Length: 281
Image (tube, rainbow, N blue to C red):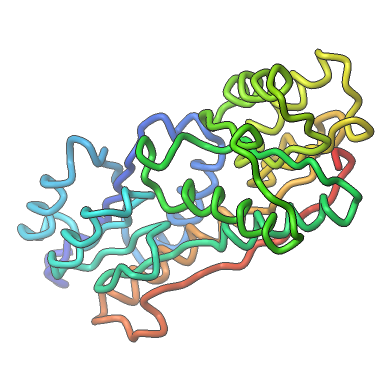
C-alpha cells in the first residue's frame, strides 16, 4: 500500500441498514469481495445516513481509494456525487446521472415481461403490489418497477384503476397486508404482480388463507428470484434478478475507474432481466 501510494481499501456505502435483512445483500457483497480481493483490495461498509461526508473526507485524505454506493435517492444526491471527482460506482441510478459509474438492471423491462406473461395466460384483472410511494422511497428500482407495471398494462391494452395498485413495503408482511387490502376492496383481481418475492409470498399466503387457489383463482408473480421461490407452494413465477452479476460488474467497473476516467460506453451498465415461469402463474 505504501509503495503504491494507495490505501488498497474500498468503501461500500449502504442507504438503508434494513437491507441487510435481505439474503440478496450477502450475495451482492460476496461477488464484490471476490473481484476486489483478487485485485488486492479490502472492502469496508459505511451507512449513507451517517457516513457520506465521512466517505468524502476519507477519499480526499487517501484513506480509501474509491467507493461503491448502494441504491441512493435519484433526485439531488447523484448530482452532488458527480462533483466529487473521485472513483465512484453506484447501483441503481437513472441514465440522466453522469460523471460516475452506474450499474443497474432493467427493472421496467422485467415488470413488462411479468404483465405480458399473465395476459398471455388469459388474466385480465391484474393488480400490482409495489413498494412505498416514490416520495417515501425515491429509489430508481422502486420507481421503475411501478413504471414497468404501467407500461406492460398499456402494451397489452389494459387500463389501470386506482384500486388496482397497492403500495406497501418489501416484506412478507407487507405483501400480506397489501393482498388483504385488495381482497377487501372493489377490484376483483385474477392476478397480482408483486415488486419483490417476499411481497409475493405474503400476498400468496393471504390469498390462500382467504380460500383462493393459486394459480387457479389468482396468479402471482414476484421479483428477484430468491432461493426460497422454488420451494414455496406453488413455486413462484418471478423475474430473475442477477444480484451476483451486479456485484461483480460494480467491483470490476470501480477497478477500471481507479485506473482512469471511464469511457462513455462503460460509464453506465444495464443488465437485462428474464422471467422465470413456475407454478404460481
